Image: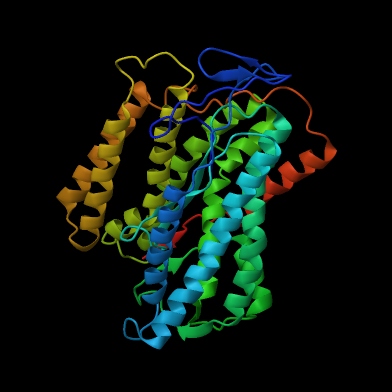
Length: 409
């Protein structure tokens, strides 16, 4: 995942250097040929990146080792951990260095990838990685190249790894009540399953091998990054293709996440009603749909932080980042508790809390403001036929990877 807004939280202020096509300012930035302000390059640091990568590798390995029924640190668990970690980290490295190399080719000051270890909350042991770009990407061509290079590089590894991994997976009896993670299916994964596995008999399911699970995780991460909103890779690609029209499209795409959340719950409840089950499984359905609500709020937080770089201080009625994070975390925790200890009163309180959060979003959040997801300008120079084709293919890739319910339990 690339990160467009500059950050100075833990790095010194960049110093500008004079060149033939950049006018230096006292603040340490320069105006480039396109008229945009860009920061001069800092010396490349790597120690923090290396330690974060090592920590992430350990977390991913341990998650992979837990995927087998064998004893922990047995030969089988070690092999499982090594296969899972090797495949997933390869995909993530390809993705991030796709961004990094493209940024360097366009002379955009970019950091090495910062990997994010997540040993407890993530089923993969990581939340992926980000690179920091200090300054503004100057042209639409650069924006497209940087935004699309990561997902395309990652998917070029994920597809063959998934095909090989699923071909070496096994079929197990499955009645839908066996517990554990049930992974979502995309159009792309279904096509690969069809050719790599063939027909799956009724009552059976594919138990993914560690390599197939890692590749599925890589495709899942790519899907998230290609959502055409804000500073995600898909937002960069869509803005490079559509220009300012993408700002309105991003608002629609962001609100679609909230629609997916309610449609998912509604679909589950309709199926339960037809089966005569009533509302007894509401906790399970809310948790299985929670992905979309969480990402609706995550992108709202990222959009708010990004907009602060461009706008005056927020007005008092604007929903703060802290309030949004606290409310979302409380809803997630209460829903997780309600999965196993459900009651009518708990879920009434949960939906009331959700209603309060959405009311705050309407009053002073992303359901009111359209400026939250405005993308920084990248000039008006045309992309050219080849790059238009790359942009279209990249956004079509998102459609092929899209999963209505990515993970359920």
